[in-house]
Amino acid sequence: MEKEEADESIGSVNTYLHNLQLNPNSDKAKSTHKSHAPTLQSFEFSSLVKRKWPPSLVSLCNGVVGRHLEDIIDDLAEIASTFPSDIKMALVTIARRRKLLNDDIIIALADSSWEILDISGSDVSDFGLCHVVKISKNLRAVDIR
Image 1 (spheres, rainbow, N blue to C red):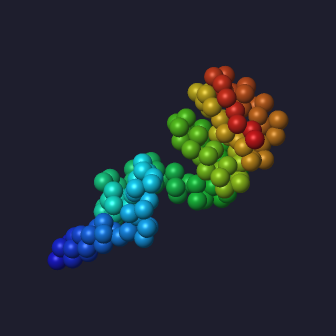
Image 2 (image 1 turned 90 degrees about the vertical axis):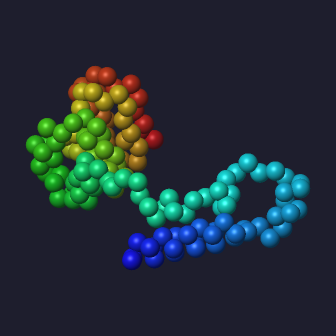
Image 3 (image 1 turned 180 degrees about the horizontal axis):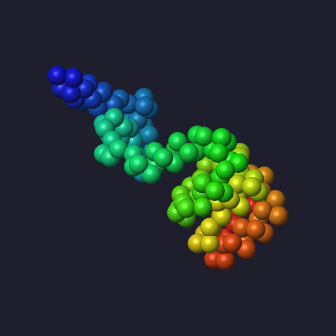
């Protein structure tokens, strides 16, 4: 019953969005300028409502660890020693975005297989970066802006 109501409401919203005109002078605009940008008519609202796949367990776990990163910073070196390289890189990204990335975190998460590293806007010093370079022999690019 609820699914049928949801399908009906999605259908009515799609119809409404399809008929919606954002530019009231669209006839003039069509004759003088041809736009190749996607329009609202080509936008499929149901793609926002229906997810094809649920989030992966790894993604959910990264989110939980990322939300509580400041609580585990003191033990991060011990905790992260068994994490795969891509998980460590994801945690570095989360720490950088949350303005938590510093020497202690980058050294605790450094991995030998990293080839690129973005520490822009972080508190990583030359000391921390030198330790990462010693660990990550394959490092080719570092963004330090």
